[in-house]
Length: 329
Image (cartoon, rainbow, N blue to C red; front, side):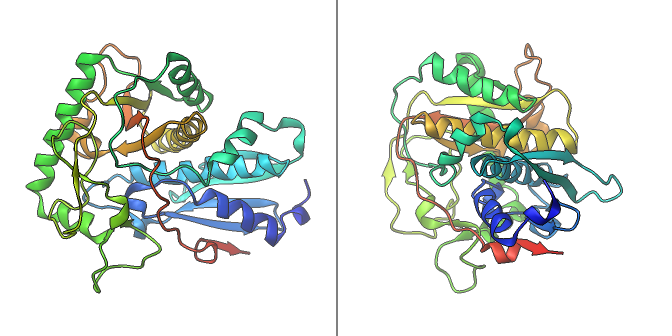
């Protein structure tokens, strides 16, 4: 594909799809640069949108950008183009995450074409799920989706699930005792107060979900200080169904691969009628992250705990306009 094919309308539409990706606290830590003469779309991380207390090594920032990269690939496939990706193309620039070149339809990933339909439908759901168990054919498909991106999705057994839920509750206690972490979370929530950040980013109060009657589900409460008085309480599932996404190694390239796998898994789950939410709390504390994994598993490092089930899909959270995250050079 010649560089002239990177038209503004095409690239703008690709990025508009890409930024539907999830990111920690909906910080949207990505920047895209279109270099039409070179035929490349660059993906950069934005360190100004990092979480120095919860994500000091920027692992979660890489995950969010990786998820956006998968969305870009799905958008390209939907438009009859194959997105060839080179990760970390300039080692001297740690924030230059990927270069993307668009080619013709010969190498299109047909699964990505199908997943494109889920991009506007995938939303984090912090609502109760039913106790209905997920059929093995669906969980097998999710595991296969992760493998396609060089990652592994593990569905823990009963004892391991209980152990992970215990670590979630431990992380909640760590968080409650750390004023800097609580302030960081508050900076990315939107309750309607006049001193909050832009409404195009962060977690709006309508996405908090109900309070839990009984703390059985690994759902983060973004309103632990009870600033939103109208929230109702509801019982959550007694037996949460979770999956652990991980890689064998633990560096920036692995994080970007894990972000792509995360988005592929979430889109596959959405198409299969599942609701999902993400739980990173125990992974934000070095004391807890190392014990989240199953010691018998070949997955060396866990990057995300995913809650799966049947229930409300949740509502879309705001996104920054494409004009803020895409530049043309």
